[in-house]
Image 1 (cartoon, rainbow, N blue to C red):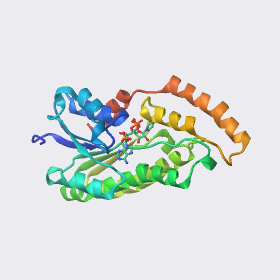
Image 2: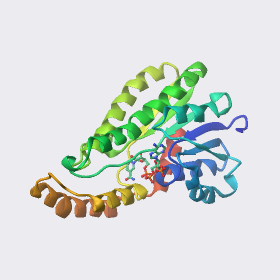
Image 3: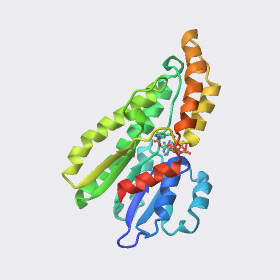
Image 4: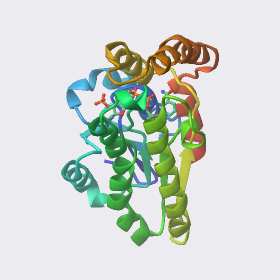
Length: 249
Ligand code: NDP
């Protein structure tokens, strides 16, 4: 349970990457200012986080299951928190999707929106009433540079982040009246499992119905250059965790 004076921070998607490092960075805060509720949809994946948290695990960091795509899971998670009191919500969970639109089914596209857009909406709807009652709170959303600018072959991922940016920009105005802050972080490339998973998906990808010119452009031009960009500009999850800590301080 949080000590008085500690801020209760709930983070989504802490099994790997950026979410894991934000959880550990806040839980290891030198002044112990945060009580971190690190959530993940499958608690069997907790080992990496528990190991990285070290002594903080069970003290300034606890774990709860949470699937942002499920109304029931979101409600259950928030109901498990004392007085449903969350000071800072960090919407980090997200999935990527890369490739020519013709090779991606509508079902796969909906899965991206279900996580990256409705996942955030679901969380905000659930925590907002309590934050409004207390007239305080901070909601942070992990967007992307692709929430600001379209990027070839990332059409659906880009659209999901644009949708989220639009939703949050509108919400921010309403929430401001209740002294609730809404912030977005828009990272460029970051070396995480996100990149690995996308590359694995691409390796399995087939291209029925996609014209040869697009397939050639995707495989021979886009992919090698995007790998170069990741190599040249990629940040670490720790860089983003430090930035997140600055934003909430
Ligand atoms: P990872 O793939 O390492 O982490 C994504 C996290 O989201 C995992 O913990 C994953 O859990 C979780 N997740 C996915 N679906 C759900 C769900 N339905 N419910 C709860 N958790 C879920 O990627 P990153 O750390 O890189 O990504 C984190 C955020 O940063 C994302 O929102 C992404 O869009 C954003 N971002 C990433 C960039 C990058 O280059 N890596 C650049 C800009 C933004 P599980 O293990 O169960 O799949």
